[in-house]
Image 1 (cartoon, helix red, strand yellow):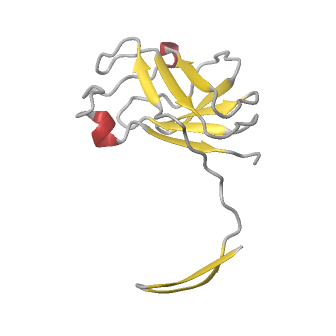
Image 2: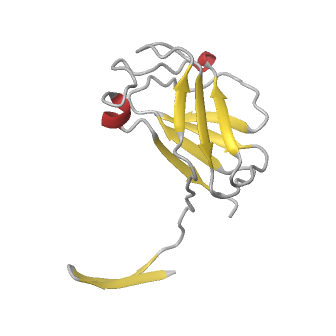
Length: 143
């Protein structure tokens, strides 16, 4: 695929794009809730979202946990729908089964993972707004 543009700020010559990772969207705003909403404490987290597209096995949903304390690896955990992993401060959910579009998801992230809430708390005027805690990205690897 090649793109080019004659933009008001100057032309963009033909540029080849070899691959683009497809990204999805949500029909509702993704949300995080906590069983123990105390700054710097470990807590069960529930990540709720409704995808606007089908998720196939292998598709990922990434949750940027800016300000949170995230361990470099996660302990083994069994979940019927998602496998969990981390990359830096990003928690990655990989679909193990097909998840139909419009299906509300509430994924429990157990406190045993060792993810700790930010030292400044999670209120709207604290880390969520300031550090972008609620940044979510969906990658459809199979579509």
